[in-house]
Image 1 (tube, helix red, strand yellow):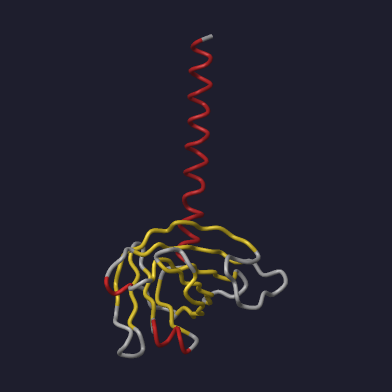
Image 2 (cartoon, rainbow, N blue to C red):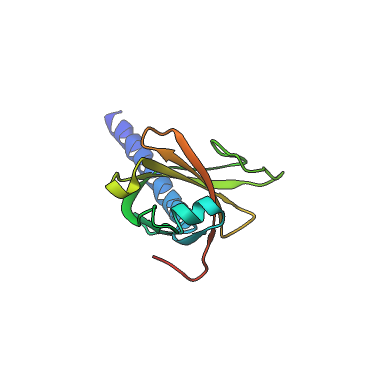
Length: 155
């Protein structure tokens, strides 16, 4: 009986490990869509961030005016999911559109100011486009932006 229970526990552990390994490449492939250089599409995005460069563990930007200093910091991916909308969406929704959503927590630095989180919503039907909601260090919404990925540019 004891051997049977140990074998059952070992089989359960192997199944969990196999599922985790199978899910890892899918998560990495989704995150790859976020990596690279993104250019602000609207005035606020251009002025505040200019171009966002997203690497595997870091994010940087250089604003389009002297009041917004350049910044480089690390981030942690705190959540990722897919849905037909996303928290604090202010952009028009298209029927049948799905988003891959990534929420990044920024490492606080003097240059990040009160910015604490970036939430990227990447429409699956429009590669290279991102709707971005920014949040303060208190996780309260601070802004809405949209960006286009610059082809061929990476960190």
